Structure formats: C-alpha cells, structure tokens
Image 1 (cartoon, rainbow, N blue to C red):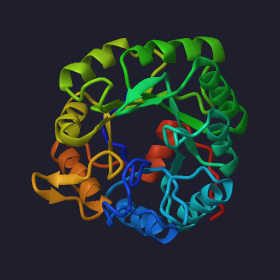
Image 2: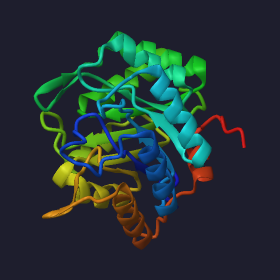
Image 3: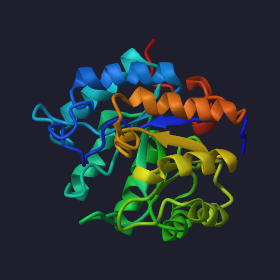
Length: 280
C-alpha cells in the first residue's frame, strides 16, 4: 500500500447531531456545497454525505440525495460518497435505494453494532445485497469497521462476492462509538493485523475524544484519515468546531508534518478505483 500521500475524507454532517443544538452543522444544500468547496481547498479528497430535509432532519429521500450528489459534483472534484447507514432507525430497504443517486462511492458497514442507545443493523443478507448492487452499478464501497469482528465479515464478503467494482478494497475503522470498539491505537493495530490480503488501503476515524490519537496512530501506521463534524464537534477542550474546514486543515497539517501531505482528488480516484462520473 502506498503511504506517500494521505487521503483526507470529510464527514461534515452525520445523522445524530441536531441543527438546533449545533447551528454550525451544514444541513442545507447551500451549506453542504459551501462546506465541500472549503474542505477541498483545505486538503480533503473525499466527502462522506448524510442528507437532511428542509426541517434539518436526516432523510433518505431520493430527490434530496440526487440533488446533493449533483450539487457537490458540480462545485468540486471531490469523490462523492453517500452513507448507506442513514439514521439507525432507517429501514434496510430504504438504505439500499441510496445507490439510485449515482454516487462515486458508498459506505458499507460490515456488521451490526451497538450505537449509543440504539442498534445499527447490518445483517448479512443486507450486506450482500448492498455489495452486489454496488458492483452492478459500478459504485465503489468503503467498508466500515465498527467492531473487530467486522473484519472477518469483510473477508467473508470478498470470498462470496469477489472484489468490488474497480478492484480495490478500501477499509475505514470507525472507532470510539459508544457501545462499539474503543478509539485507541492498540485497537487500531489489532484491526490492521486482521485485514484480509485483498485490502489495498485503509483509513481511520476517531469519534469524539479519540479524534487526535487516532489521527496520529493512523498516520504513523501508513493509513488515511476521516475527520468532520459527524464524528467530532469539539476542536479542543472548550472550543467547538466552527467549520469542517478547521478539522480538515488540522489533519492536513499533521499529515504534512509526517511527510505524507494530502492526496489530490485525482490521486484519490486512482487509489480507490473510482469511475469518473463528472461531466466537465
């Protein structure tokens, strides 16, 4: 795996935080596009999108999804990735329809996990359906690992379904979710030891207070980064995040200090095996 540059993913919104509680959260189409442009300028190569409706509530409405993909693709060269997780209460059938919005990439969580006070359902049949539909539609999945046991499920998916579209296997360790695996360097190293040989790249996400330790551990181990207000609302103790670009810029600065500067969007597309859907 190449470690010369760092793919920085920005996850700007998520489905958990209320706009009323955190007004800086980008929830409107205009805010999403402004965020995408600013974060691309700060060093992001990929954007992981959760969509909100006109009342700022999480939604999987196909119209909102298609509009979000088109708007970000029009304004930036970022790899556009849609979440297929939605909110933990979204039905499995609705989550499959995310692919109808024609994203470059989609998340594919490799198993059910406790998620705060809820349960994030990802039964085996749903995972296989999502994987195969992504292959058919030439959408590149990012395999999300919330528990170490999910790595075994990833191996099983590859054995049963073959490689994803594009031939690359990119994994993201989501660490520090209440109820799931802890956000510690030790846990990350254990997960890396379990990855299947087909893995071509990986990143890590530190939730909340695990944000900076996981940034440092992932860079030191040759991995890539995901940051953003979906995962972390505090820039430092007593200092809320004012804009997603702050988190991207800090990640870019640390990566550059580690002599692994941010990856361009062209490099990101090549590393992930992305089909070019851009019209310009």
